[in-house]
Amino acid sequence: MPMRRRPPPNSAHAGRSRRGSAIISVLVVLALCTLVVSGLFSREFVTLRSVENRASLSQIRWMERAVLDWVRVALRFDAMNDARQQKISDECTEPWTVLVERETQLDETTTGGIALSTPERPAIISGQVRDAQARFNLNNLIDVSREPVIAISARQVEAFKRLLNQLQLAEGLADTLSAQMLLTRPRKQGEAMLAATRPRMIFVEDLQSLPGFTPEVMRKLERFVIFLPGFTTVNVNFAEPEVLSAVVSGLGMADARRLSQASQCRQPINSTAKIGEAIGGSTQYDLSLLDVKSDYFLVEGNVRYDRMEVKTEALLRRERGSNQVVVEWQQRK
Image (cartoon, rainbow, N blue to C red; front, side, top):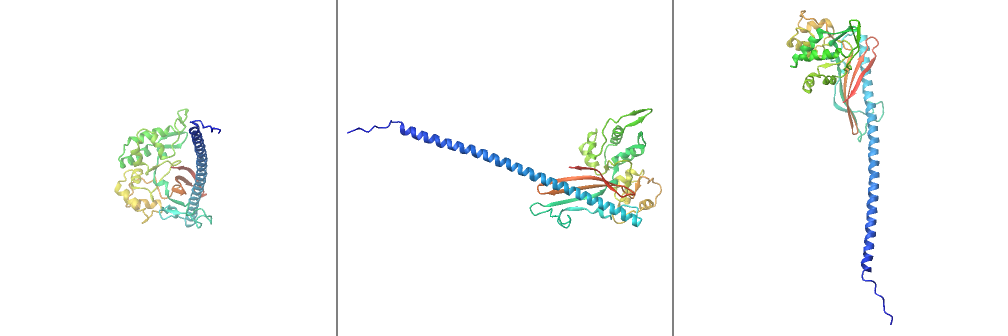
């Protein structure tokens, strides 16, 4: 009878080892495939989000332009309406002064029938138009009336020192700023022409590059000052008492508050002749730096669409005569 051959003693163990190795190889391949596929999906998700963010940002830019266009139309209409009524003042009763304090969702009634906002992606705006000439114009610190001969305006420097004193800040900041601003203009000195050695300051935030203008100083100062192109007066119908007391030499805070309170929509001042009456009929003050009309307006707004949110600020200039409204600058914060 033939005898059966027994398998080598290690053959079963070897078979189990090979099957185990095959299973491990398959698991490794599956893990690698999973990593590759998840990486592809991750990159696809990032790409999709990037496209969505760009689309949302594009919508926000469109909303910003739409808001600025609306403000420009409102300011131009206000000027045309003033001309018809022979009105020469800008007051807090103007339509453009309406504060959009609460977040307002844009719908078809405000976008000409365009379905811009949806429940999933709301388009929301808030903000306000402010009279930029309610603030102290820091460009007044230098006198360019005899350009190219440019000099520091001693009168305006003293006014700025009074404002700094009202805010409990060092008066020496006025001398520092005026000296630096002189370097931002090409100017004639004797027979020689000197080139500008510093860039012009446009935004209030630019003051932080100067010595002494610390974050604490900026927090106290920023809502009272601004850089406006050229020489400007202060509109008493919007100015704070600190600014009024600064630009009118000898005007105490009590009279300044009385003058400011007269402009809080209870009794707007509609002519320069009535500025003295609002103080109490006094003629001892030089009121030549005050006015009741403005050419510059500050637009401050917050625009939100989907996941994107942008705070924007723009300076508009309304040209007297033509009533055209142009954007001097715009910045996003």
